[in-house]
Image (cartoon, rainbow, N blue to C red; front, side, top):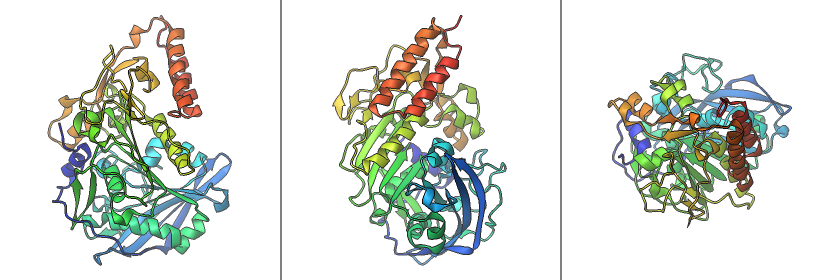
Length: 449
């Protein structure tokens, strides 16, 4: 249907430019210590965390200055962390929605209890000029700078094409800047996360020389094949499907079924020594809870398949991969060059390749999808009215409620439990997430008279 779903989302907001060779970044930036502010961020597994915000200054490889807000969330006592730093590349797609600004998808998707419960530290920076001056009308801990703690009135970015330089400068500064060193302490490993339009940028960075040596592993979601890259004063896009460069760290990509239906996601089906790809059967690009969060029409009609547990398991797998422990086998809905999707009797997509090998199975899917709790629809073209918000709602998909087909609550819970525990044993779910899925099934009325 579309050459790239995430490219379309970006293009609706700002027109894409013709791609040219990407410059390497030799710029440097620093955190303005005079602007540093902080606030308590909560207790996670007995460790008190603090949120730090400041302005970040620098000049790009083309000599253009910039000044942008940045954020670090870390243990109040740095030595109490686990030595892992997560960089979150903000996604611009939420700016025209009810959110009103960019979104930090690592925290929004995986949640603070999980991330900071692991003991990691976190960092992000505003890097897209579309975000300049934007602040959510609602103060929300998942929307950086929305509470006005940091005075961002001096922020500016000269060119859309400066986005990659700003990110590279900031990630490098996290290793050397006196303010960063003071609040982060010793960091032994660095990770990155981004989704959708932000994911295409992170994916691009890992395929450019300027992206070498920044991260040990990255989790990239919802961006099909190809990647974004600097293109003069704009951000361009390449449809080329290549592995991340050697030296850019390990990369785990994950895609919803939407990317397979709408934007050539099947072309990303390959395995490399530093690359893995997973596809989530039944899942849409955004979920019903996201449709509600973004203020889009009919959230109750959107796809409820909750893929967050898979994402958290893949994040843990990426970290372990750095220690030499291979991630679980890749999951694909078809062969590398096959655009068709096989479906079960209830219309839900089936996983057909596991670890690169063909499989005939009804397993390897989210428990609610595997048991047929609903018919999960990853794309609903009826909402595509030519507007950005219409396209965004379209990729929220829909569902057909099939819960009445379960005649026994006990049988329903037993089926969910079987699939959840099997996925847990295979490494696709964490124990805590499997427990939560089973408990939710137990607490439901599905199958009761």
